[in-house]
Length: 468
Image (cartoon, rainbow, N blue to C red; front, top):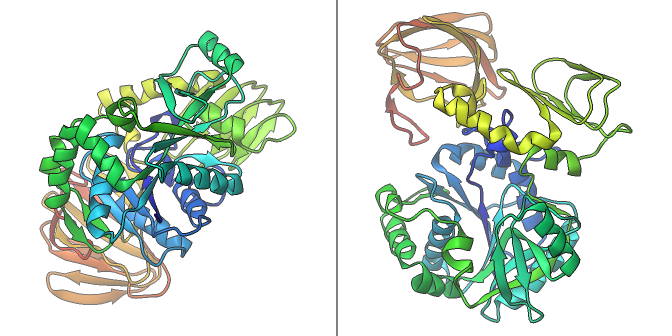
């Protein structure tokens, strides 16, 4: 059986706020090097022998960022992105991917299911572990990769593995005393959330142990639709599916669960403290990124995204600065950051959802100023890209080009704007912006009106298939 990578790239990584946001989650961030976690996962997959083009499962709102990051690697001339209209945890995602792929495959395939947001320090050892998992899965086992523990960790689930490789039990995150006992006993592995399954065997086990999920995802695939590299699961059918993890829905119920011992420098980077553990440190044990100045600081993680951060006399502390938020916490309380994100949601604040810079399929925009009746944005349009043909009911816009050339459509008229030239878009005017050049177009947009929300857009035509 050939290996079919299925990369799960949903989720928001709330414990890595304020860097990770709902519309810019951790798998799309560069946390440990020049590549994002998703890109690093794809690079590892490319090392595997006899591997098929990857399939990536993402949320609807992350589709264009994901596509851009895949294509920036220039690794895979072919790939597919499966779009979830809503999050239902990992069991429906994996089931839907298996059903979709079975429609296309001429033979049974081996699904290698990998989260996109894990760090693996030793890729060569990963390749060897996949070979062991493949051999086990080809014998009909639903195989999980269990990580050999090197400490009593309370942040991971555990797997009890028998001598023949079969899984005896799954255990949720234990307390410290229990974790210490597991480490002393031996035979216990961390549950990595990585799997290898024969596709037909996986679907047969879904039919036995999670038939409702299987039936809903069969309809979601049957009624789904393709759009280039994208395949969108049907929202109505997926809405009816139970929301369960693969462990709960299947692995804890099947009699065919097995585990492979894996030791390849694994971490799920689930919190800032975990990132501090695995990242390169200075002589004082600090992990530093961005414009940072330190005086008498030790064992801290300090990251600057937008401005200078200076620290004096700190110990065991986390400081994360972005353009619109600053987080300060003890490193050992980094698991509690989710409580802050929940408060932001309750207060209906945008900081849990978006950054000042928001990425779009055509480029990005950055909010520079935001007030009751006006806001100022910097808009960047990629070469040869163009925005939708649109109008607004509640705002006027004034554009000033600061770099590149803009092609503007306004009420049927077309014209070019060069640097230091401007135009005015009255309320209710149908308009479109395009970059006809070979360098990025940058302009300053001033919006004035009674309502400035992004949902005040009526689209008439869009090359990316978006609607109002």
